[in-house]
Image (cartoon, rainbow, N blue to C red; front, side, top):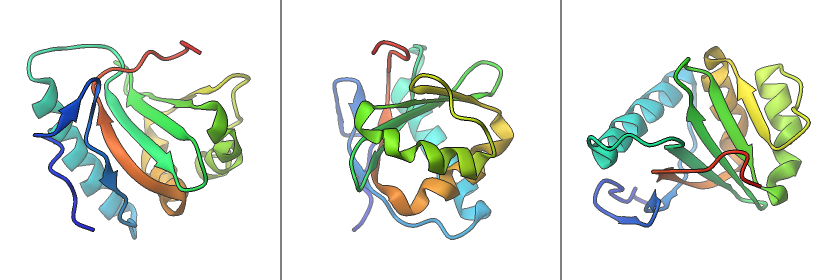
Length: 135
């Protein structure tokens, strides 16, 4: 399925859903991340808000909101119905799961994280704002 042009189709606080295409290697992940970053910057324009990033919808239920903080660390917020993904995240990033739903990961594990989740993702969308720890 061809990708939707998320730079022109937005509703509320997120862009259009994009069907997931499997990423084969770390280089493909880096290219995918770079493209999504540029699209997000275009959508945001000069508006700077907190919580902009990507939302992954999993094929077996749940969502994961991901963005980086000012230090470059990765923040992941799993919805309740995506709790089943925690062991995969822990294994892919070699980290211990947090006590809550929000993960704080070092930026150097980003490619491994996306590759680890790759086969579980059904779609993704750019998110203009997400309130972390709001649940």
